[in-house]
Image 1: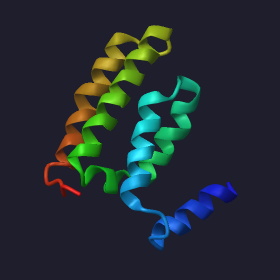
Image 2 (image 1 turned 120 degrees about the vertical axis):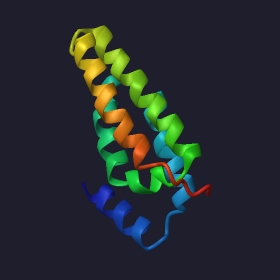
Image 3 (image 1 turned 45 degrees about the horizontal axis):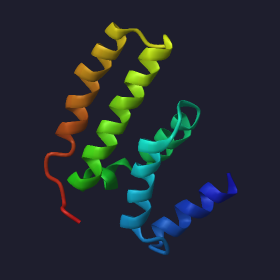
Image 4 (image 1 turned 45 degrees about the vertical axis):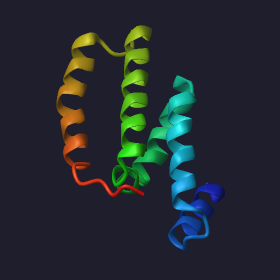
Length: 104
């Protein structure tokens, strides 16, 4: 918890390069296993507005999240119909909020 508080403070005060951190975070989502995905997606959610301001970050994050959803489907924790519902409703909302990207 201390390290997350420190990260939030450093990020807010621009002591951590935003672009580098957000790129690292998106990369972690693409390469993490399912056990790590819960933590990574919660962390990504905290910085989602900044991620969505860049199409170069948004697309890989969405692709990684979809890949994790498919992986969860393969484990039997999420049915195909639940996956379909999630993608049908969540993805358009995510894409709508990223329609005016800032190309960092």
